[in-house]
Length: 459
Ligand SMILES: Cc1cc2nc3c(=O)[nH]c(=O)nc-3n(C[C@H](O)[C@@H](O)[C@H](O)COP(=O)(O)OP(=O)(O)OC[C@H]3O[C@@H](n4cnc5c(N)ncnc54)[C@H](O)[C@@H]3O)c2cc1C
Image (cartoon, rainbow, N blue to C red):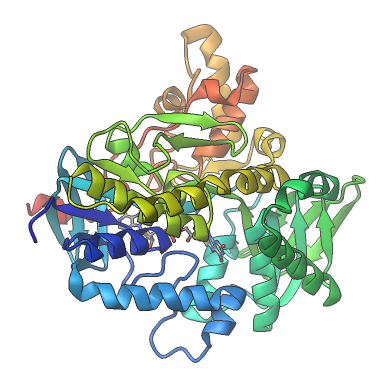
């Protein structure tokens, strides 16, 4: 069948369901992912030859993982599947990709970007020591490589991923030295009514916490990480409990993470406008409930369009594909679209409750000590950022993050500000005494992730 050339970036739950709808409608989309197989973050595949079962790897989500994996395998031959391929830039009607040392421009009529999420950190003194990982990296090590980041691991941060990863490590046989959640119990209790709207997920969350507590894991809620200590690698964490008492806990690795943010660099490069979401405390690309953005031909779905979780990502991926089909006049299924719309409409309340239950600790981020590195690519400290903010009064300097980037090189390194951007904005807003939204966000730049310069020179 002839139809528009549709490209789908991302093969997590959102991308997989989007491609499924497109293929069922008779299209042969181009399907791109950096990973060697579909699954995305939550259903990350293990390396070949692993002996851990789905149940061990994905726990209560094993059936969903198997369904997404099987879906991918059915679809590869029905589309132009391009694994191991980075989409590093997007321009009108064209996606720039990189695969096996080669650049290729892929023309498209419509693109569905399902690029997922990444984690938010708060820089803690010593966080750049070897042995300190993000929670997601700790989880990927376990799921994909079948290894733990250490044998005595401290988990520090906030959010469902904190408790989930700690419980997964416990189950895999590691010693969990500490779970420190910066959110006090009373904040979570206040959000509980909203979480009841999704009783199954709520019960799963409570079960994780119970499992850790029953195993005798040291748990601090409403605590603060003070510093990670060690000479060549992390050896201990210093933490303060909610009464202000300090403790030093020995560990050989740390999993650190404070919730998620959309991986929205491609949406940014495509020209999609962003708005600040005060509850998520994230910049969110604009799209309607079907995934259509104000940029013609560009659609968004899944966590990359706003954090919603895996079930929401599946629904949103399918819905965005239907939007593509409707807009291209290829096919439409009113009953199926109405079913997806109803299911999607129920989700934002639960998500808002989760964000309220585990807020990003903005005060902690804003008050990172002066000597602490915020941008690890360029080794820029919190003090240098504050100095750039102060310079505003004499030179008209850094009143928003992109100016601060020009003054300090913050966000100019390999991660393109994807890691340091959120805490840098908190520090800057605090130093300037203004609202976080007023300092803006670091704009995306191609390439969204590092690519070898020689590959480009060869073009
Ligand atoms: C590290 C990490 C671990 C997580 N673990 C869990 C968990 O255990 N349980 C849970 O409920 N939620 C987890 N989440 C949240 C998770 O993201 C889910 O909500 C869900 O996976 C979202 O589905 P998605 O399809 O939107 O994105 P994802 O599943 O993240 O899939 C996005 C896909 O896009 C690909 N991609 C992104 N950018 C590009 C690019 N430029 N070029 C090519 N490919 C690209 C990625 O490789 C990835 O496969 C995790 C999130 C992160 C960041």
